[in-house]
Length: 153
Image (cartoon, rainbow, N blue to C red; front, side, top):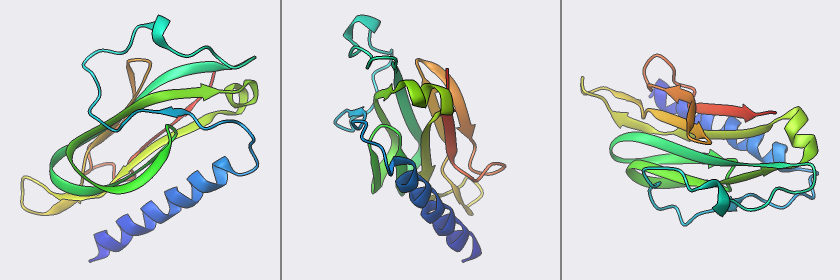
């Protein structure tokens, strides 16, 4: 019961942070794919959209491991909070403005709970990859805060 309350509190906190991060910005939202599993290799650089003036683009892949179903909350390449079948992944392009390149651009994923190998509930593991490089990871046992990363240049 306590871990469920903790997980829900963490998800609510992340949702609030995601909403506040987007407030006051006239910048267009990042491009988002259809939610299908990510391809085995990143798209060639030539297929990426052109960067905004003074900005940059980055390919982002969010992944949640495990089996079964759980709630997944994410932001940075669109945003959502939905029940998903595991393993789950979402990929898209984050387009940073010149200001976001300096102050940072938050990308995160917070998975819900799954039944671990010992039969106890635990948070599902997650990873974040930016331009093909893994930049954040949570095993769901030792680190139960989900995965987040601030893209800066």
